[in-house]
Structure formats: structure tokens, C-alpha cells
Length: 213
Image 1 (cartoon, rainbow, N blue to C red):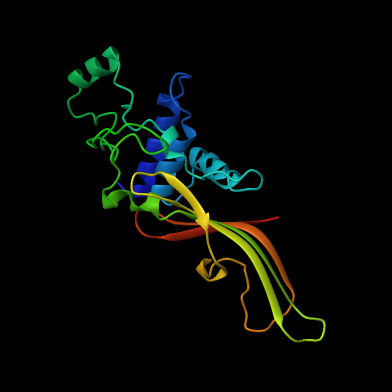
Image 2 (tube, helix red, strand yellow):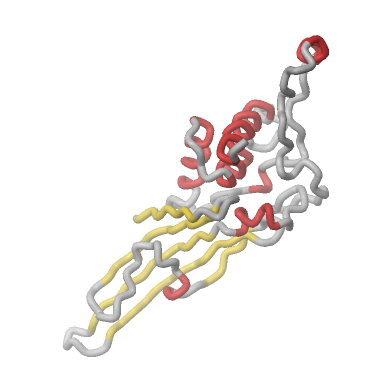
């Protein structure tokens, strides 16, 4: 089954099975699954992507994926007694969930703003591929056309091995080329403020969004 189809199915299941108020906010499970699948077309993934982008829309700027809010150790819905009986009577019927989610056999970890299971496996590299750049850049030449004055405040947000989010100072040269920030050799006037986010899905396909303000 294609990864995009799995993502849609899992995202839908997550939103249904984790809807109880006693469980952490399920939208991050949908973001996790839809991001892995390359944001496939579905109502659930469209909603998840909207939240993903809204979180980087000033202000405040939040981690777009808050994996610590997705209880990955929780299991999907078990079949009811009637469904089990139906399966016994029709052995050829496909099971309710044919493929286990990628974290089904992972080691449980204490939760402290990171995943509640071990996600150090390369299968979760798509989580660590997410980078967020908060960009404020100004450039202009002196009135006499002499020195070129450049000023910036840039912060880069990224995810660690277990999904923890960190934010640190960065430089214009670290901003990905896909951003609209134009660092040309000349010194024309530039005033740029945006938040840029990039990622790669589980198959390595690149994606990005930029919010200007």
C-alpha cells in the first residue's frame, strides 16, 4: 500500500481513536503521519497541514510539529465483539488495520518535550528534517554609495534525535535557497521578515513554506 494512502488511513484513525479528552491533542499525530506521507490529499491532512503552518505564523512562533503531544504508545482501536465474530465467519475478510504504524514495536521513553518512544531509527529522519528559520534581514548602502550595511536577526529551530525542539541563533548563509531572502552581491535596499519552514517526507521528497509579515 503506498505510503500516502497509509498516512491518510492512519491520520484518520488517529483523529478518531485519540479523540478522548483524556488523551493528548491528536492533531500532532495527524501532522506526524501526513508529513511522513508527503501531505496526501485528505480532509485530515489538510487540517493537519493548516495547523503545521499556523504554528509558524507570527506571533508567537511555535514548533510546527509538537511530537510530545502525540501519544505514540497508544494503540489503535481494537475490533468490537461483533467485528471479531464477523471475521471468524468470513476468514477471507481483511483485518481492520493491515499495517502497524512505524512506532508499533519501539521502546517507550519518559516524555519531556520529546517523543514518548524511541525515534532514533532512520525511519523517523523525516521528523529531524524539519527546520524553521525566523528571519529578519535589513540591507542598505550608505547615502554616499559607500559601505553596504547589513543587519539581521535569524533563529533556526530544529529537532533532535528524540524529537525535542531547539532554537538557536543563525546566519543569512544558513537560510535555505528555497527562501525568498535575496542575498545578491549588490547592495540594493532589502527589508525581509518571514518565517521559513522546510522538511522532507519519509521518501525524501523536499517541501517548504514561507510566511511573510
